[in-house]
Length: 256
Image (cartoon, rainbow, N blue to C red; front, side):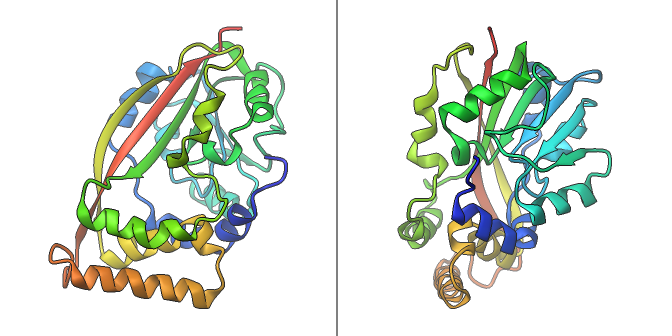
């Protein structure tokens, strides 16, 4: 994205630390997806595009592949580099990737593709990806079949404005894409367990369009979320709670 969405630039710059604490990691199944579907292994090179604070990066490092992380928001990229000293972390965008043609074996976008889901970005991914290489897209999505999670979404969704999100489905319109094979998908489940101030309140405040709000508005959101926690028997008074997620993973191969 040559022009970073204001919600992403302002929100992620301001809330890099909160993002790291409040966001869930990824379930163990992701290791198999990276190995068997994306094809990562020692001797391979993977580009993590829109890498953020590096929440997903250790999963890539664990494959033994060389990892290059591209992230445009300085505060996020600095956290990633500090936590992952073996990773080459560079400034760049999805529409202007600072790598040579056919230079990587795979590209992975974790919690990010919806921000730059446009034809120019996808063409740039195709340029740097070797023929036969894989494009992987992965998101942790709240399990709204749980009543309190759905209630949480009713607090936050009205505030999203024009910020792109996974659930609006706009990103899917790019597929099938020129030069890529069919888009396959897999689903895993997980729970983010921890202090409700981190996994519910902090998670909510780390959402880009909420983190970009004036501080007084953020505090109002936090008040509503804490009231929801207090009114929910499964959460009230608990020092540890479990936030349920579905992890949705998609992949397609560059075929030409």
